[in-house]
Picture 1 (tube, rainbow, N blue to C red):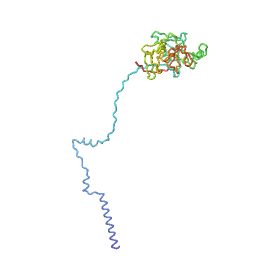
Picture 2 (picture 1 turned 90 degrees about the vertical axis):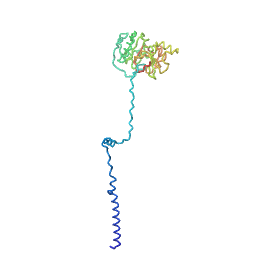
Picture 3 (picture 1 turned 30 degrees about the vertical axis):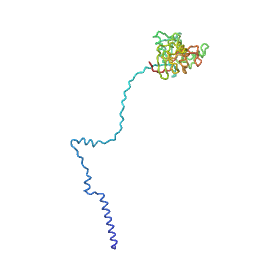
Picture 4 (picture 1 turned 30 degrees about the horizontal axis):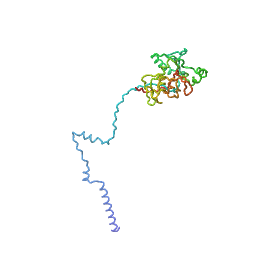
Length: 293
Ligand SMILES: [Zn+2]
């Protein structure tokens, strides 16, 4: 090895030695510097130790928006008086099983006054209410069996303008009753008005005889009557018992405020060609209306 090479090698060693010295010195700090990094101990006042600890321990939570529950006062239940009214055709399933009326057990022909329970219940309630006002009901006909009804329907005496086909007859369903004329005034009297849009029922100041009511409508003396509007129905007393007179086709009623419908005379025809029957009362669908004073 010549002296030149030796010098170069020596320089290389020197450089390596210097570099390693610089690099290692970055990792280890001299003691004099370490002294500055010793954490300063927190001076804790003995008396306030708990407070200081608490302060330390409490993490500073970012404020969460807790919704304040709104206290709404419980609404006081004010009972709203309602009333059941029936003036539309019965649309439910036809019930079965016959019972006999307690208020008037026999027809004027000494036959049982029979019907299904929910019809006889309504009838008996109406019958008792009439009785308490001195009106005694007389029943001409109630439940009729299929073949009796078929006889009526096909007979020359009655026929299809008077008697329904047995499949359509509410008598066959045990949900219709025919009364004699002595209770006609009581059952047909107009007692109130039902507003279909507002679902409100208002009693008239005084009940009005249905024939007198029809005369007033014809003469346009309507101030004491129900509002003459197609959505307002004059209510006959029997309708308050869920029993509707056969004055119109109940599945598609004409306007009940029409004087011809109010009169319910058998001299006029319903749109289906059958005569109006002021003696016939059948179960209707019940509507629960609010009573307005
Ligand atoms: Zn009838």
